[in-house]
Image (cartoon, rainbow, N blue to C red; front, side, top):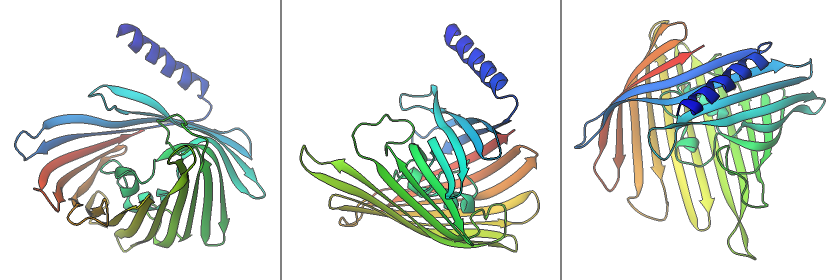
Length: 314
C-alpha cells in the first residue's frame, strides 16, 4: 500500500512538473447520502475527482489530458483512469481531434443541465453512450450551427477494443451550445451507429438517437431531450426534462425528471427518477447542493433519499 501511494505521489508530481507551462485544473465531486428505505445507507462518498492538463503548443496545435478517479465496481477503492488524452489540430476543414476524447452525443445537453456533479446525463446514466472514447473526430461551425463527427472504438474509455468494428457518432446543434454560460436557445440532434457481431457470420447495429432543445434567459435555464436506443428487436427510450431558476447570484433552484423505458415492448418495466433541490455557491471554487431524490419503478416500490452534493474546483 505504501509503495502504491508513493508511486502515485511521484507520478502526480512528475505530471504537474511536465505540464507546468500549460493550464492545470481540477474537480472533486463528493456527497453525503441518506436513504430512507430499510437497510439504506448513511454515508459520505467521493464520487469523482478529475485532474486536467492542457496547453496550446502552437496557434494550430493543442493538447488536453484528464485523469478520472472514481469508485470501481469492486467496492470503495478508487481507481484512476485516463479519460482524455487528446491532440487537437486546427485545419481548413475544421478542428481535428485525435486520441481519447469526450463523446459528442450529449455534451450540449450536459451544458444545459449544468449540474454534472449532482447527476450525469441520461445517455450516460442509462448507458446509451459512454462519456469518452478513443478515436478521431472533426468539429466545424456553419454559421449558427455547430457540427461534430467521431469515429471511435465504441467501448468507452474504461474498456479495450474487443472487435474490429467502429462506432460513428454525429452531433448537430443550432443556436447557443453553452447555455450554462450564455443566454439563448438551442435545438439539435445526436446519432450513433455501432456494428456488433451476433455470431461468426451475422453483423447487426446498435443505433442511438437523441433530439433536444434548450433555453436560457431571465434567470431560467432548462431543456428537454428524447433519446432512443435500438439493438436487435429491443427499443429503449428516455424522456428527460430539467430546469434551473436563479434566485440570486449565490442561490438557485433545480429540478429534473427522467422517464426511462428499458423495453418499449414490455409493459410496466419503466422507471421515473426525480431530483429536486437547491444549488448554493459558497465561494469561489466551492458549491453545495442539497437534493431530494426519488426513484419510482412502475412495478415496484419507490426509493427515496436525501443527497447533499459538494463540488470543489481549482
